[in-house]
Length: 365
Image (cartoon, rainbow, N blue to C red):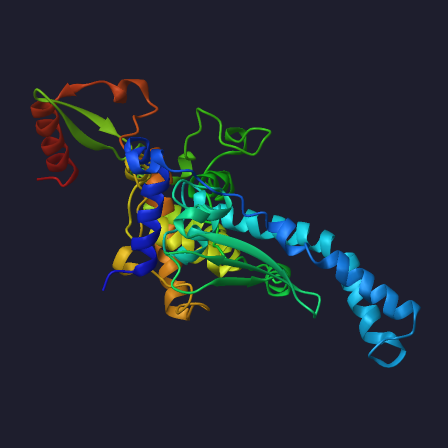
């Protein structure tokens, strides 16, 4: 069965980024009402309520002992405007994540709808059946309520619930880590490069190369080259690397990075869904019109959190594979010899004869 969140999020992304409405005569012929007046409607009756509570306290006509209820409600009303601004700011900043270039479409699509209403996207106006309102609750909390055709039932978000999640480091919309930034920051830390290959900002220099200690050598100390065919009967030597040694050296740093990413499991799920699950390369990701998503390999925020040990292990393996294949591989593929004469192009047939003769000599055949 198709993932409902993926289908709806990708539909909304296409709709919000499309120019199609510019050619829709019905859309152009009608007015577009996005005057939700969120704060105005939320506070339209608070002045009367404030005056009534104040008079009750002053005239000692309260309905509660020592006017406790009335004083509490008066305090709530005084603090409400500042709370509204903070609540709306926090909520809207989280909803805005749905517009990120690497947004995971496995997030709940209702938040993409809510963001489209808030940002006044074409087609999400009052005259299209959409609305958003703010409600002040007697317990001092506040609620944002989103309604509209794409929402089967109202989406209600409470200020206290949102604040509680934020304090625990949880967002209602998962922000996908920038995998390229994350991997590039990790490169200088894995112990494969000499200190002079790292600049003052902690980044690899343009001429950075993996340390010579990871290059394969023969028993006599000479480099153990691999011969590659470059066409027209010609070949050249390239260095070979000890991949086991490279991985052993990098593993403690990679394990520490994985542990750091998994400390926020919702971000790890987003990283898995957008980048790791399908095993795409950086080049493939860059060339895609729409970011890759894990599709049937997706992990669900609702069902798979907290992640079990099997998924954590799978995440770790995919993270390491992605790092090795996309970031280390470029430093070890077809790297030319450092010895000038060994880097020259040569005749492949002659090289094969020489190699065969060397084998005969070495084995006293």
